[in-house]
Length: 357
Image (cartoon, rainbow, N blue to C red; front, side):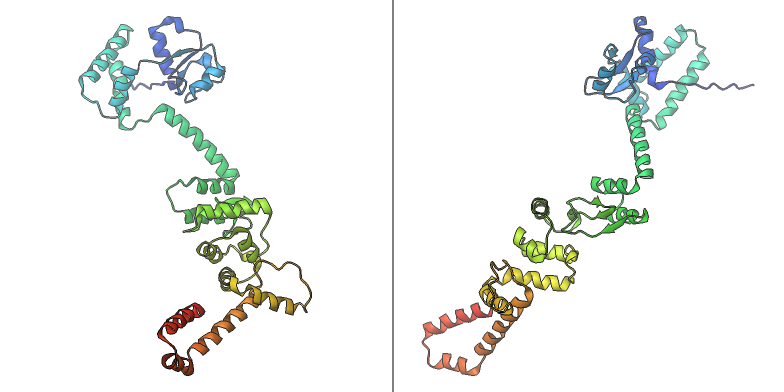
């Protein structure tokens, strides 16, 4: 062949070890690890160290545990940093880089390598600067990629739920939930009986977490979860209000997203019930009388804290209608304007506002 080409194979896992052995022959035949301190990672290791399970990108603390007799070398960080800057394009043409290049050519000449082979090797190293990547980081990403592919292949639903809870990725949350459906998962809206703060899987069903409900406070979600774990499942909407005492705005959010669909009532009926249960404590005594009357006058023991909506609604509506009709009558306003003193009129006006509220 007129133009022979040279193929270079570099074992990068041991490249830095061989560099150190060229400078110190005493390192031959013994376990050698090139890396940083206890909080660093293994940059390279010899074949002797690999027999103990040491690998590149492994934490140094773990490598020391696996091979306690290994010789630890930090390496020449100054020259490595110059080469790194050159590979990233930040130090091309500088004086230090030229000195490093000259040193490389001199060392190759001392070891008997031809000048054209040395120049070709340096050219290939320079071409690598077009796209270079940290070796330890690339090895770590490789391990993570293989693990992610395994989980995505054999545990697709669990993997996708973990991705959603990690709040990473390049796409919106809706696309990840859509991917769950495409994988065959049954995705359900948040439910006060089964959902957690983050999306979770129960009996093969994925329940959306409370964190994905807009404007729902974290302390509200924590309150209902803790109460459910401590006292058991919620029996009804009234039981939920009694046990949590949740604010009206937060309660309406849970109803609108379908958090109480286990009751079997529609969203409209639940909103009516919730608002009357939270705003009608004054009608309790009257409702209790109607409740006992409906029971035939029998003693029913302790009444529930919040009575059924079918009892409270008629009472409040009836009281409002009667008060408004009476206060709007012409006879009443005529009497107020003609016979009553001014200070009484002010008292009656304030009383009207209280009644009509």
